[in-house]
Length: 327
Image 1 (cartoon, helix red, strand yellow):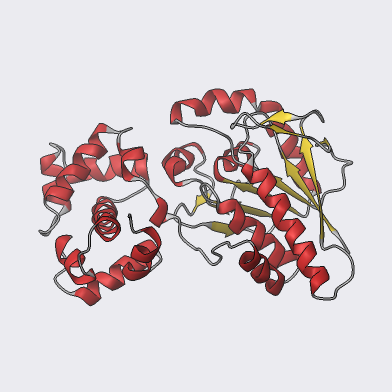
Image 2: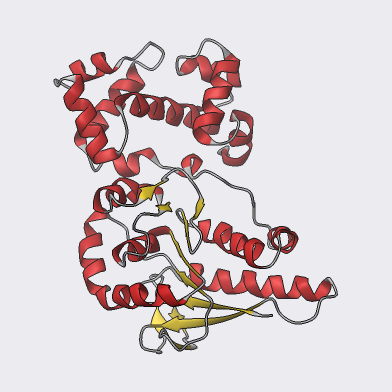
C-alpha cells in the first residue's frame, strides 16, 4: 500500500527541505522496483496554505499540488525549515505565520505522523504539537527554543528525535536524516540504507554538536563571550566554576542561574563545552596529534580525552578530523 506524504511549503521556507525530501521518497520507490517489488512505497504532494505557488527563502518558486486541509489524503505531514538569519526575526516571523500554525494544530490530529526540521520545529511548538514531547531543533536557536517552550523536553544535541506521532530533526540538512528515518520506519531499514548509499547521504548521524559554530551564538551574549574567552585562555589549567564566576564578578550561584536560564547549561557543562569546541578547532585546523590536542585543552591522558570527546561530540577525534579537516 502506497503511503501518502504531504510536503508542506510556505513563503520563505527552505526550498531544499521540500525538494530534497521529494527526491528521497522518489528514490525509495525506484529502489523498491529495482528489488523486484510491485508498486510505489510513497507518493508525495506539495501542500501550501492556499494552494498557490510559494517563494522559498532562496527566491526560487515552489509549485503547489494542493491546499493544506483536512480532506487532503496525507498520512504524513512534513514541515520544512523557515529561512531566518537572526534571533530577532522569530517573533515577527511566527506572528506572520499564525494562520499556518493554527492549521498545523488542527491537521496534526488527523495524520499518522507529523514531522518538522530545523527552524520548522518552532511552528510545531507554537501549534502545541510538541507539548510534553521530546524534540530537537536547530543548534543556533536551541536556547531560544528552550526558553519559549519549557513544556517541551528539548534534546538539543541530537540530530533526530522520534516521539511516535511526531518526529523532529536538527539544523540544516538534517531533513535528509529525517526522510531516511521515515523511510526506514514506514517501509523498511534496508530500503532506507540503500537510499542513503544511492544518494550519497552519510546516514547514521546522531549528534549535531560537531556542526555548531561557537561565535554564532556567543556574540549574542556579551557575558557568554567574555566567559568563553577566559576559559579558552585558561584551558590547559583546571578551570573551576568558582574561578570563572570570580572572573565575571558574580557569585557561582548567579552564574549557575544565568547559564541555566539563558543557555540551558550548568557552569561545568559550559566549561566542558568550550574545551570541546577548542578541541574540534584544533582537530580541524592543525596537524597536532590527538594526544597533543588533548594536552592543549587540559587532558594529560590521551585515552581520557578520547572518551570525553566521544561522549560529548558523538564521534571520535579521528573521525571528526577526517570529516571536518580544513584544506
